[in-house]
Image 1 (tube, rainbow, N blue to C red):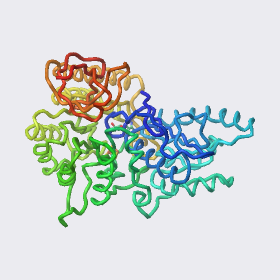
Image 2 (cartoon, rainbow, N blue to C red):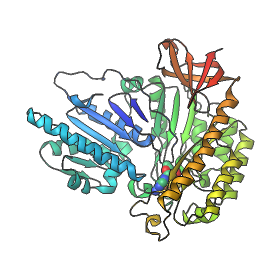
Image 3 (cartoon, rainbow, N blue to C red):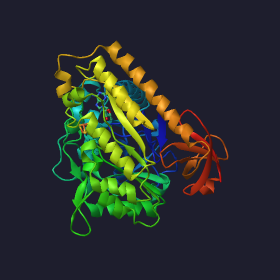
Image 4 (cartoon, helix red, strand yellow):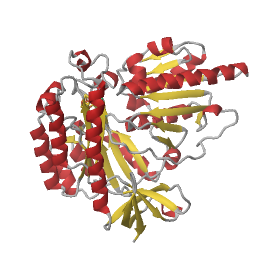
Length: 482
Ligand code: 5AD
Ligand code: SF4
């Protein structure tokens, strides 16, 4: 999948780490700060919504340094790849992209022009200087915890240094990155991401996130509320709170008490002008009572929950260090459904984790049958260097992984289709987000995150309208305004 996001950033291949696939706002507008002879930056984003958010913050930081965002790589003086390391192919894609960029840089040099190339994100963090060794076209490697040092790093790279900035900063990067500016917010559409938590201390044995994003950090309430206010003032109607382990977020609340995500959502729901709240992605162990109660009580909190389980087999869950059983997960789902009966569930699954037997895999199929997912993401296990899973002696053959993935995906597709068909004939609230492919059409989102296509005027973007669903497409619904 390839989507354009606003403000000179481009998103490629929304593979998620523990995050469902929400397309980035794809409104492309004129850059906010036109100036003669300004330098231009093109940001290409791989991976999850956290990277989409980071790319926007990097673009903001660079625009303060006089770099205007551009949507055209041929126009750019600086190309930044914001990379993802969650599975093998993601890193390989970056290297092949760098091969293409080398040709572009050589063509530029032949015309006497320069092109600076930076690699950011989780591949940058994991590979560090190796990137420059393998792809000498790269001038700058910067990890996700050090983005606030980007302007200085670029100045050093301009002086001819090959810069590698992957040391974790002691200071909180959020404190140093500029808050979203009203003009760029307005250009990015009516939905926005807001990172509230970053990093992970869970150490699932398949996952690189604790190594690339570092340990769990929560942003303070005041910062989050301030950013949410700016977003709403800029026209945003729906905010998705982001974190690798978003439901582990905690902080001292406005009342001086310790808050969890449930209390934070309650507080944000009071913002006038904000119509919808979502959060992603969650770990089953951190779904506490207050968060479940928020789903029961808050009308603005959308009835959609991405709650990855990865496997339905207790022995695989143990080997993955998930620290819960399949039965724990099913009980939790039951409680969430009691609190919010219309909630749509989404999940992530890994097939072919080392040691996974046919019985283990069938336990996953049984769990899926029991839960009935509205949406899900499933992957073949990919050994990540440095993670405990990679060192296991009992890896599963590639063809077995492929076969299992196909069987699981067939089941998940059927469930997704059933969920969509269940919407047909109903009248639902749709937040209109952006123009559709055809003139006169707009695309919005159902409460359950499905894209909904209707005939509507562009002046209605940002409105929540009643829509009667008339049919289903591959990944979307069709309907008429009521
Ligand atoms: N191999 C395959 N899938 C993985 N994920 C994370 N690490 C790996 C890996 N090594 C999947 C998990 C996670 C999602 C975002 O990506 O399902 O929830
Ligand atoms: Fe990775 Fe597990 Fe942390 Fe999710 S909870 S980011 S899968 S280590």
